[in-house]
Length: 373
Image 1 (cartoon, rainbow, N blue to C red):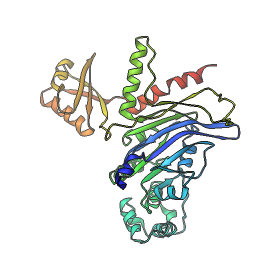
Image 2 (image 1 turned 120 degrees about the horizontal axis):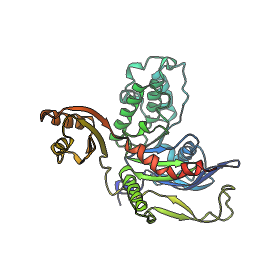
Image 3 (image 1 turned 90 degrees about the horizontal axis):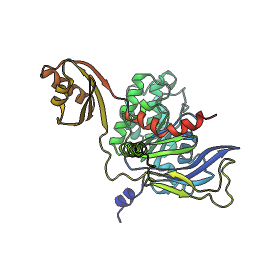
Image 4 (image 1 turned 135 degrees about the horizontal axis):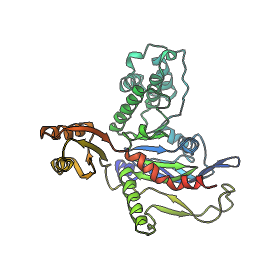
């Protein structure tokens, strides 16, 4: 088997049955998930859910008490030096050396990475759009510029996998948009990106897959459209009074002999949500739109139905609800189409973000458990 085929056979990141605790506090409980090559994977959870601990394990900075993580098929505990060549890790609130220039900062780290040519510094300056800042002292940079500098630093050794812990934390709206666009550019260059956040709006426009972690447990992980379909099937089964069948990818695991992850853990098998590998390249996600029109909403729905990129149209009272594939350009086309047929549009509203809906549905049981006295 050639090297390319071998690389494609491995997920970029594979975590299996991770357990960890600090003192008596259990922070990871049988966490398992995959991140496939070329994905932007959103690692979602509230503060204290276990995201940073999982990321530190992936970055070879912490050894799990049990379980394993592989980066491109290499175990992070057994071969950390090899893994570090493959990974670019940017922690939350990464420190910088402030009394040197941007170029000096990057040249220092290029030398530390043993990069054979300093020409790579110019390349990452251009890629992260901070070339015009290269002669400025780092101390003079804004928060957003320092974040782009941090990304430039971790790109110096051309890693295959980027692990970013809250990269848009504390940034203003413009800087958030710039970081988002840069991540999409990096994905187009073939990078696999794991991006952690507790702010769903940061992830919804870039992620192809997500993992939702809460109280140290991975609740669900996989492609967004597959998770959405799975939740819809579960809701339909519950609405008809049936318990949903166990999902594919739910693995049973028994704690190893002598392992005591915490007082709350027992010896009974634990269910760990393991993502089902996607059948092919990530598919465009369904978007939802609510339209208020002058006159008959049924006529507006009939006019839109069956158009390019339109998945479904229904009338709910005075509102026309449209499911479609596309971005803002598609919304503009829909409105323009209606106006060209003398149908006045008086209101346009995006439906709640699909990622928000998935998060609320997936964590509903956990929330109800916390609410119990």
